[in-house]
Image (cartoon, rainbow, N blue to C red; front, side):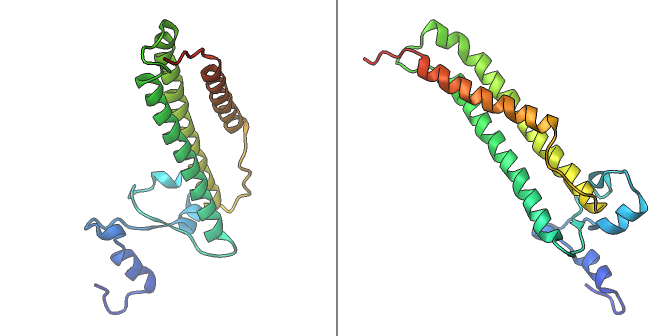
Length: 174
């Protein structure tokens, strides 16, 4: 309930409640914080689950939405790879009875895809955090690097390798 004489910012801080949850974390004014403490991560500011409030100047809203979509793409790829990992371990064989080779390859391939899934998720979240921190300092951003390129190259090579393996496996249909 707003009090008489409260500023618009005080009303926003006091009445903010995401999804109607009765917990009222204080939103964090990113530009005010970035000007006071440079170098610290925005995600470590108490309250930990408080919303990050950015000024909507220039193309800030568009940039933040693009950053969130990029993170969600990494998340989607990670979930797909985790599902493939489980599918490989549970039913790797192509016939009624799996061959000895298929049984030996199922767990290692499943583990490889599971690890790549976790790496993809960590990479996406790390890029998201780095980008939000740079947005708060109004720094120029280039969304590439050797870590991103190497992880995505290994993922692509693994997917192509497993597809070639599936095609090269001799299947005899009964």
